[in-house]
Length: 238
Image 1: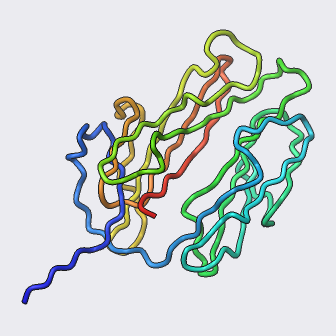
Image 2 (image 1 turned 30 degrees about the vertical axis):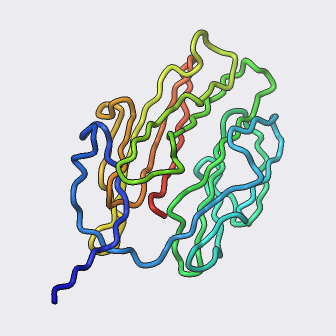
């Protein structure tokens, strides 16, 4: 008797730049990765928080989780630099501008979280006319239902300026870099597609079979030439 076996599937993002109806999703051999990475989660600190110069903020990583074990390590970054390994650290920000606090976690099997959770903090200077970096905010429509072949749209409309300089529209440019990943035959996560604003029609994506996540990078420019960049990860079929 013949038997049939269907390998496990993860998701890959298909962007509108390669076909509007999702028909160009490419077949790609996939094997289940060994070990499930933990998920980093920040609580107690809202994104786009605005504070005064020298004020202290506290972030909590206790909400991070691991489906096949437990979270054992916390790595906090402040503006891209190692800042703390505590579960609930405090940060005193004494420089005007936009700062980014990010968290990755490690589980008891040594797996590092697939996502990096971040919060944007704006520190106001003593003078409101002091140049301050804008805040880049990535939104994805219907991001709670990333099912096969569903259509979604990236947006930067919630990005905002943080000073009173310049005239006209606060955010004058949004620059995108969208990268998706798949699991190869050896269980490794590898880049699958890379799409930029030049090939994305309306920043729309279609979700098609076989990949693990989408990583979106956004750089915004405000009306006095200040720029800010943020990155957001979307885990698929977790």
